[in-house]
Image (spheres, rainbow over the protein chains, first blue to last red):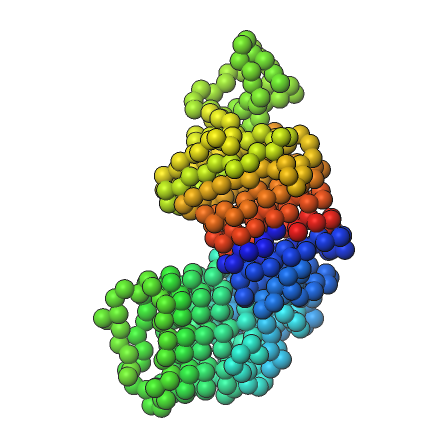
Length: 274
Length: 194
């Protein structure tokens, strides 16, 4: 069916019974080398040309997390859905405990990666705790947001929803919203002290973003902003950095931060701390 | 089919409301004048041209008819000798009917140049009057867009019940596609996505 569609990188197939003879025989031969395969959580797909293409991420559709705990976080990320979409996690690192809620009070814990269907005007709250390092590659937490969605709140609410303290763990938001093309703005990033690669690749390929958040951190570490907004082609403006950075391995902190941002045509007013 | 004088009417609308024997009768209604009936939905099958483009049929199955319209009102048969040219930004609507099983050698296939985004419901080619969600004929859309490199988005495939071979090689080597249409059918049948 899609054999030879060499640029195809997204399939949503809701089949639950795939036992018929050759029903998907070679259906995804020679598609793109990476992509997303959204499917029913109960269906057992094989990897390969007859199933989920090699190199693609499997993203099962799951139920909204069951409410298991009640608390009032100091802050949370409030996502407001602007069109019917899928929302959830493509990957989840075990160092993150993440809670989802529809009312900011009754919370369910997401224990595995997966997405759930959301409707226009839905509101979803997310908060959590981070208790260890993430790392480079795919051993990190990555949201999936397929439709237009806005977000409010502090990213620190994913690190410690009770105190909102800056995290001391490395790669804390590495690739966190990568590929979320529906994301229309960013959460606030209020941390003053960063550790290694805190925001690296955080909004890579978020083509719905039009501007960047304030970045008040004055104590940087290596890789912090690497590829942070890479390929954000919707960006038309960016905000200045603090003029005074006390600690910085700047040679590597900013590499490729705006690479591929074709909408940024005038950087003459950008004030970089270098 | 209803008949008024010498004018054959397949469907009639009052605004967006379809007129039937149960809600209207001649003598009590006035048909709205204009360029034609308003579409019942915005989900008609259509080709939207992103740049100057052409499309036609390289093959037409013996059990199929395909028509196109540049205004959504006036329809022309699309045959293997037709080539439709679209300027950038223009849209062509498509519809048709299939009346029996197709086969691996008796199928319909588009040919395209330029950049074309297909949108709307593919079932407008199956039976544009009823828009079923069940495909009963084998090989229905076999090869339909095969090697259409100009195709940059696929139409919707809303059928939930499929027939053997129905989507076989439908988008084969459509290198302009990045996103597959949603596939809502839960039970697959022999060779349906082959």
